Amino acid sequence: MFVDKIAFKLIEILQKKFPNVDLTDLDLNSDIKVLGIDSLDFVELIYDVETQFDIEIPSESLLEITTVESLVVIIQKESRAVV
Image (cartoon, rainbow, N blue to C red):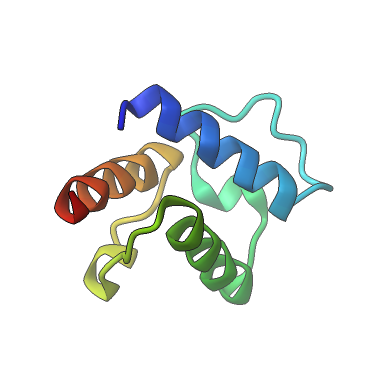
């Protein structure tokens, strides 16, 4: 799956999950902390991402998620692993 398609789908997930957060300035370099999410929100986000993309993100990869781009890269990597 292309990075731009993954990013677009991820933004849709973020918009649905966090409707009160202004995502207009969100880009690939944005820090996940910008969303103002707590650890429970993060776990729910990962669950939603895994469900929407039909992947499983390994626990050790969760610590690598610091920016939107890092999450996109992990989604792309795990999508390839499934195929």
